[in-house]
Image (tube, rainbow, N blue to C red):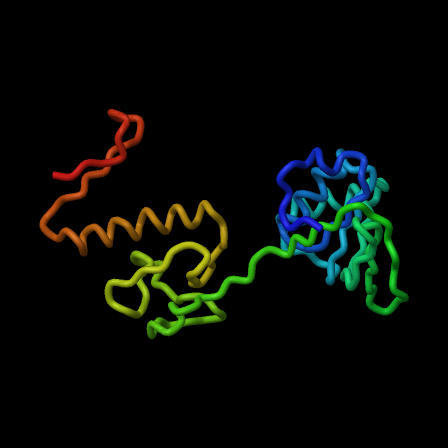
Length: 199
């Protein structure tokens, strides 16, 4: 059982079962379809949370017989003596399925939690911090900002690109708060190789 793929060559010619429905599970299913002798993707629903293009690729691989797609199912047991040799899969509305394999990759992703930040008196909605995206990603508490996957606002997309954008806007506001008497001058990265200067 591996929780992360460090060396894809480890799975060359092997039978691999992948569990999950997000980007990691889908991406590795597509990649390992050309490496492993057999790839089975097990997901507890029929819909996936990953990028639509990758979902389409997985369905295409399944239609072409390069991947076994087992939905409405989950791995409920692992078997083997010194090494894994099969897993038991519980399929909704059907009998349990026993699948031979050398590797099982449970790639379920992360469950974000706020931890102690949840006690700071911030406005929280569905385990995310509500921010004002019309200004600078400020929270309801003066001087506290939230950017990236931890925040929420109407139309929020949890993409790295969006996090970079939010950080750029937030940093300008935080700079003005920290240094009210200084001027922040941004320059293009192609001009003199710098991103900005302080005056």
